[in-house]
Image 1 (tube, helix red, strand yellow):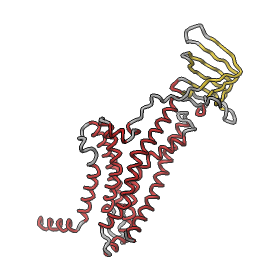
Image 2: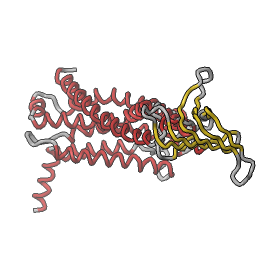
Image 3: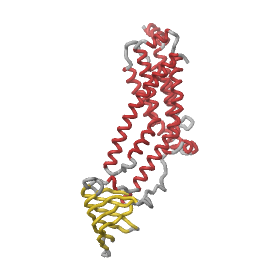
Image 4: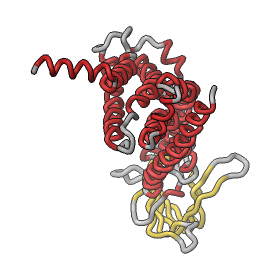
Length: 366
């Protein structure tokens, strides 16, 4: 490996780090805003907010590396073409084959890393996010209760309404609670309430103070009414025994062993991500070519459109595979091959042979 190879690889890695950092910050901010809105509405506990956001970021990491690498190579090579560095390197014997080799020396290890991320880390992170959401849906936590509105927990098993929060935010005031215990509907009106945890059993309770409890069935006369100075309502524990992971949360071994088309399509989708990284690494080399001092923005726009087209084709190809439109043996292999064909077409158009043939054809037509 020569000095120029190491220089080119170092520039690509430096640009890749910056692009990945920017994409990660954008993704983190969007995810944080989305889940903060859910936490503000009481749909997500603040205890698991940062965990879910972190898992969402880890889940997306393998999917953002391929486009980040593609645009990093485009930017580095485009800048070198603009500053006439590639012309000087070509005159020194550093041709396209060496450029391809340097790019792939970075791309192949990255493809291995992306394979591990999408095959192992992505389903692990997505499974944990789904399980945390399932626990949240089946559990109760008044930490997300908002004053002046009805807050539903445990799929309607517990409804809490509070007129206002105390000055320090630790207690609810003017509380209405509806809960079901052993099939009986109970209503509680209390002046205040707070949440606590039993240190011995770990169970959580809403402790209501100075109120009344009404138990009975609407329409019947056998109501019981009781007054209390302090009354504790046990919060139901999360029940995830019936949790079943979605396809995107299944391990690659499970997907590969399944005979269902949708599972096979999910496996092919994950496999297409590292293959796309390699295909776009090859595509970026001819796509970055531009005349000296001409800039790279024209082809950069085309590169963005090309990558978004590829992303849409990924989902279309996955749907075709699920519906049986595409044969199983073909899978989604044709997508990276299509991008390689585009790379070959661009190299052909940029070659002297093509322009000589085009000039001769015009002369013949004339």
